Length: 147
Image (tube, rainbow, N blue to C red; front, side, top):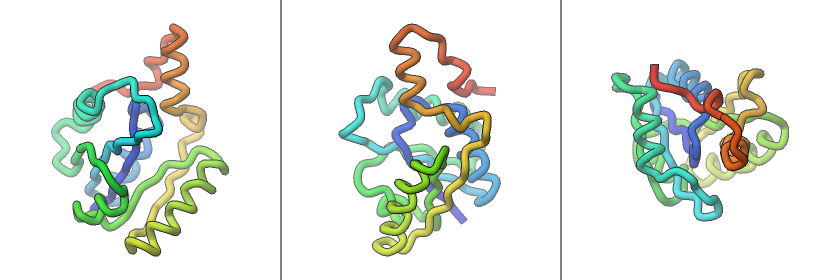
């Protein structure tokens, strides 16, 4: 089954990589969709994010990376995904994602699988990385590097 993992991924963190890798192991095929979020101020271009994420999965034909606009569940279905993947770090994330999961199931018939963050990544977020970088701190340990 093909899974769809969506986010703005600005930047794609070690936590995102952990969720994506675990989803790939569970489902065998993964689409990573970089959504346009008009409410977020992005620091990296869509092209930079696509290149970075593709480099992490280079040579793996079971991973597809692309940018999209529109409703995530609709794009997932149009691309043959049978399930949505969401990472959750805490109870606040879970509550927000549960609401989205319910509507995506009702409207689009797509189930959502929520994967909890591994403990060592539970505090890592793209916004935290952007803020550290903005104030001159080295946040490179939170950004995965190509192997």
